[in-house]
Image (cartoon, rainbow, N blue to C red; front, side, top):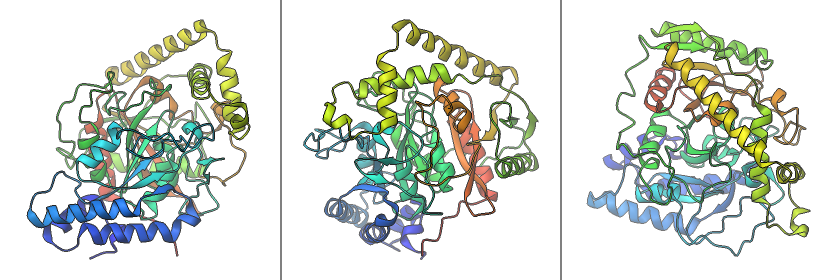
Length: 466
């Protein structure tokens, strides 16, 4: 039996069924890993040892009796700080929130994981109100990359990605409003999937709801499909969720890509691409051709719509900080406060125009896939490689943001498309590089299938921490 903390969820479930290992052993080993490395990485902001072990004991008893309650029974799970967990504070990593305000119920994401038997370990770090693509906050400090602790794991789901890569739980929950699942998955060498807008029910409804989506960060594509089976189940608290189809997202996972029509967009018309990123992505594109896909270079035609994106983003920041006290705002992220200040000055007409731009972008990308006709599109996840923590990097309130490093992810939040990041190589210094796989609306099954085909040739590897 391999080291417990390195096992993926699907293998853990098989091992539980065969009696080779128990949920209690795995949970205790994972908690030991957290306590050994969290001071170094700062991936977790809450760790519930007692609750996790109790849940694992209950799972072990169910496995013994042959009465498991779900597909991930006994598998350790991390919950991003934004999601409600009954009895725990939801601080949004912000000093403007109170530790005394406890959630009265599990949010949909937490509830689906718990109902399926997942062992809730705790909450993972995010920047304040998940507002940027790195993970640091005045409330919880700086989160670091397990591949190189001088570097950021990305964000805003950086605690989730750092934890997953470091053996602190194979199933991690994240959110993505501009790349916040795909960027940290890219920077830490993991698989991250942003689903079609509305696919995963979530409350409380975020001010960035129209562009934000919950989803999985995992060490394998199969584990992401396993999580999606649970996360997509209906919840009446989200009135904007898509209709639940009951689909098993593992069906067809191993069917390969032969005959698929796939567009390749280098991204260099939008932003300069780091040469190492460009080379790794091009090598991955050739692999898809070698696997039988019909790949052609094609340009989806969208321009950089940063101004309209920032209109949506800044007004959301203004709502998040609307009731904050002055003395608490003084402790908040300066960039977030600036964004909120801009947002409060936004005219209603400008906001509606941003929504019109969003609709036009969605139409453009939808027509691109339909007219190709393309099943998928391949492109870099980020144009740059992981950078040092604390480094000045463009944030959403900065006009240089569009020229920095996120213009290849946020368009698909604005348009609502499904998109994933899968590792496709490493820099000479040993840092992960990500390939983005984008599809039209409702294309999660196709994205998962293509991702699994690539993963079958290039299994995801984890960093060595010692």
